[in-house]
Image (tube, rainbow, N blue to C red):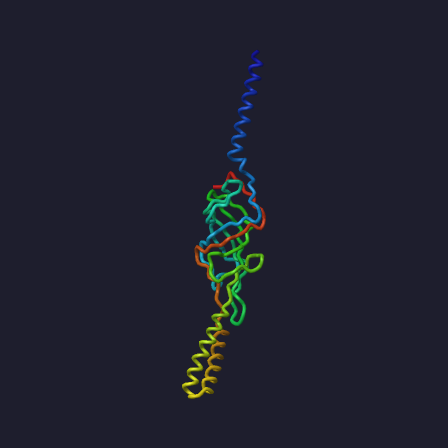
Length: 222
């Protein structure tokens, strides 16, 4: 009789322990191994400014998420999560041709708990910047051209030259000579001046996209 009671008690104890482990697993371990799929978009904002005029390859880039990312009705990347990356390539605008470009890769995500994961993310869009566009599949940021500005510089200089030529020569011929000289001066000014650099101030919105699935330990997400 006593042995039967002992067996019953041991069975009840084992069942209670198993139930406790299952509850603990649902609270913690059940959240481990969360997979954020490739193609997930993560909105960020830059913590510091970036300019092709002063930035160098290898410079660190700091940002943070501005909106939570969810998976299966659960926040897996909270807003305010830190993101770190590097500038991989940079190109200043040319004096005659060539636009400013730079490529940055975000490589690390740091949660407020200190939990750190590798981030396979590429820049998809820069909605917070003017006159920039994304070039190619790697996410290179390129400055828009300055053809309109250059044409305005030449036209303005040509107009001034025509006025001076007309006054000096008192003739249509003088105006033509002055206009040609002014246009030449304007063209020279354009050729000696670099195109616009890329300037992204702090707080600029940058949207990245996961190139590969990212696995997170849900018990460490804060």
